Image (cartoon, rainbow, N blue to C red):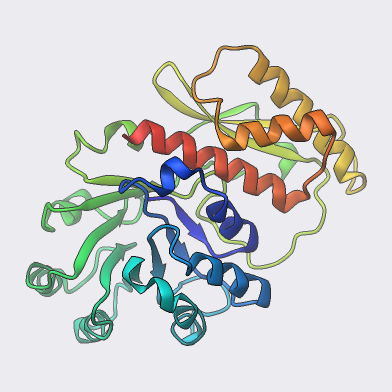
Length: 309
């Protein structure tokens, strides 16, 4: 259950998801919409054509719509042809009264629901009682960094999902080391009693609402499984001297990634994302900074899906 914010290239990564994932009942992405710009609405329209089910968070906590009803008023109507495949997601606020939570959850009749626990909710007993008596609540997703083990254990065992931010965020692109340790929940969730696992891909949980301009170094984040562990490798451009020539710097970073792939030591390199990186390298094509992120996410989603099976 990959967790994405509704930025342009994150939505495009979903639209380009490999058919094997789309046709699987084990793939259910989560979208927290952060804006309703025109181009994003067009992408939601395409998602609404029913290619695969997904969770639409109705009360986003980051982005442009944390204080309004734009998701319900603008995005949900675009999905009218796909309502059977849309799960309504709600993020819990610690101090929100249980009556408000119940009103939100019961307000979406005929939808399956998903609760995202990014806090130890204060009215825990009342919430558990409601969940046990409402068959429309399909999944409880627990942010491992924000909830305590005894809180997670107390909820009904059926279809609990563990969410973890495995991406180590560094201050600037040029600060990334060759590799970082990545979350191992994809290997552990079953033995820990969870139905599935979720993460924030090769982007990370921390949300940046603004435009940061062109970085001094271009970096490709690439998820790798080696010796039974997940790692995030970072391939940097040789030049880190200013914001110019992003295309040239991308090709430098891409050269390092392709050399790495050609070493033949890694598992999981035959993904659509990897093949797109190889195609870029062959044609010396620069997809833009957002496009680099999109390709990395495609690779990550496909790799983690195969590992989670």
